[in-house]
Length: 135
Length: 375
View (cartoon, rainbow over the protein chains, first blue to last red):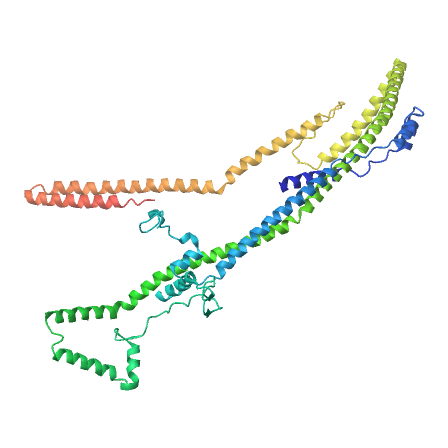
């Protein structure tokens, strides 16, 4: 996604750099001396200097601003979610760090610390209380 | 472990009982064991069991008797007890005693010898389990920490969205600028094209006029040349060419004078063309090539020596064969005279002599056959 934007902007900047800032000026004196038709060159010169090229109108900046607003909203939501996740992780981390060492644990303690180690005696009433494949 | 269970069960049980704070006369305002929290972390289990002497009797017994009876007290007690049991036949010695003695000996020997190893093995198994659990826990901790880091990084990254939109705005500005420049350029190009067209048209017209005029002038001039003028001009050309050819011949002679001496001084034709002097040097150079070739073949030393050696070899071979032939002739004559002079001798002598002669003959032949040495 970002690469597409990058390529596009690079292409644009290349195009911009390729064009000269101002077109070269026309040598009116030479043409006045060279062209036999009188008045033609003068007429051209007058019209040329009078001509004003309009600058293109900018229509898209408003859209981009709108996009920016949207983006900031979504980022705020994302940041909120991220913070919640961080809080969860921190909690879990604290639990793990404050655990008693394994050497002093009983199986009950282990089941409290890691609930997934608890053997399900209702589902598998007979020893080893878990499917044979899990041994 | 039982102590632990008790410790665990006690608060639960007491909680269930939970006597009310004020019951009649008892002004017990302090609640008993009604805290919901668990007790502090349970004390860890002791590493080793209680000290035992001789594998049977706990150390506490010895310590109990020490103040009264000293070090030897328990042992005296034990010996006395044993003797009492044996003498009063409270413990009867029978076959089972012997069997138990043997079994116990074996057991004690086994335990004493291999006990430590077995204990170490069991400890190792336990250690492995612990290590696995510990590894799991450590990995979980690490994973959580990295997750927290990643989340923080993502939050930081999100703050950089401003740059994206700035880039987009930049893009727009660039597009506008490019468009404007393109427009200016097209205007300029169009105007220039039109002006250049006018100039080019004018130039073309002028050139055409010039060419036409030149052609017309040339045609008129050619027409105006009279026949008399033509003859005069041709004669002048011939004279000029003769002068040129004389100067060219002189130059050529000087060049060829320093070449080979075999060249014959051929008379140079007086034709206008200069081609024939060029042909003669080519033929002389071809003649020069042939004589050196003949000399080269005889001068070749190697061929000379080879041929000499070949001829000498043939001559020597002929000489040797001649000598052999002469020797053969000589030996045949004495062989014949011997046979004529002794016809009366006995057969054996003859046969002997013949055999001897044959032997000498064969030896001579062998000798002779050996003589032609290879050249």
